[in-house]
Length: 145
Image (tube, rainbow, N blue to C red):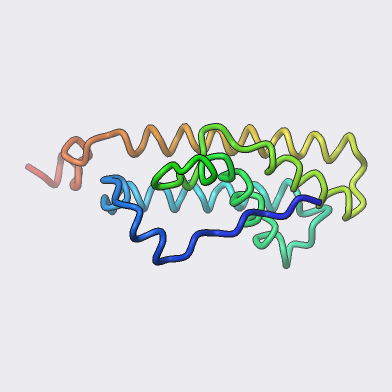
């Protein structure tokens, strides 16, 4: 099996510089919602094979593995939702599903659907964080008047 990469230490993360998206509370809130939705999708897709109790541990390992290429390339900061997930994520999930007894064809389908879901989530995150904060209304037009 492929082990998930270890997350960087908090000190290393702080010392790597700041991205303006990381400082924008709206972008962070949107990213959190996206990551939660992706986690729920993962739990549903894999729940029949990976126990629901540990689904989020498997999800976190898979998401860290998806970030492996960006973290090994020295990208700073490493994106939470990589636009091009590392192949290590597919290998990790495929191995865990196989170990849980999933038939190869079903495991391959689950892995492909989760890869596609991650790519969609990364695109949604990129779109949400590319909108300048000044163009995102805080109040509805009716309340602002």
